[in-house]
Amino acid sequence: MVFLALVGVPIAWLAILISLLARKSPRGIVISVVFFVLAAASAFWAITQSRSSTAAIGLIGLPFIGAVGGFLGLAFGRWRSSTDAGRSVGALAGLGGAVLLIAWNIREGTKTIAKNEVRDEKQVAHSAQIDRDRAFIAAGLGQNEHRQGAFIDSSIRARIRDRAFLTHSNPSYFFQALAGHPNTPPEIIQELYTRPRTITGLDGWFARNPATPRDVLEKIASTSTSTWAISQLLQNPALDCQLLEAAARTLQKAPSDSAANVEVQIEEHRPIVCSG
Image 1 (tube, helix red, strand yellow):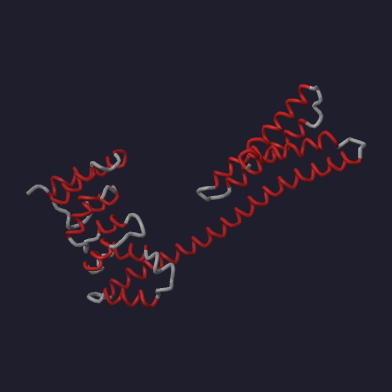
Image 2: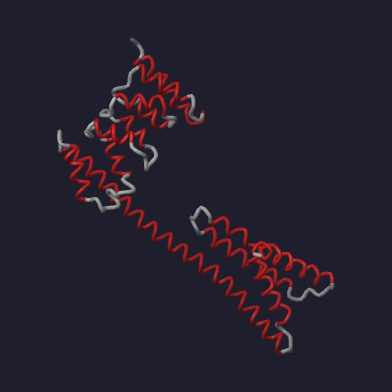
């Protein structure tokens, strides 16, 4: 039924316009087309304000919404000058309905814009908190030499309910800070690398960290197809010929358009690290 309405109503509206033109009775057609365009355009604008990945599905209904506006506009256009009381009421109802339809579309679009602004403000505040937490973690690791594990444990316990810092389901940014900090104990890096990932791109943070254990670097060199991760590995002080050649072989599996620059970097490093 829904599909029939989505397709049938626009077809019916178009058929009526063609029939009126064929009968040389064009009164109201221009107004009908204007309201069709306004209704469809306002609905399209409202839909495009959404950032939802499924918002585009709403475009399927544009012909239906336009046709409803077109029918209401046609009633107003044909009956607005009628002396018949019923038709006069129908003309006013058509005009009112068409205006309300367009106004509703605009209202929904403005509500979506307002929601987006609120979400953007929250995201900015959340990102700022994450940046502060990263700085806190980095400073804490640097100030607690030989006690990094105790610092991490106490921080988690103290802020376990702080979503920006660490939650049960999304400790992503906390992990990212630990993965890239040179004072993070190797055993913690080992554990982070082997546990399920809740954030992409950690390989690059592990790869450039001089505290990352050798076996983790070897796994990254031989398995990661991230060109960014491999480029970070090339900056690690532990880079040697074995890691370099493993990364070069793995890089062949990466998309060619993103691997070219890293291939150049590998060639630049090869005479240095493989000279012996």
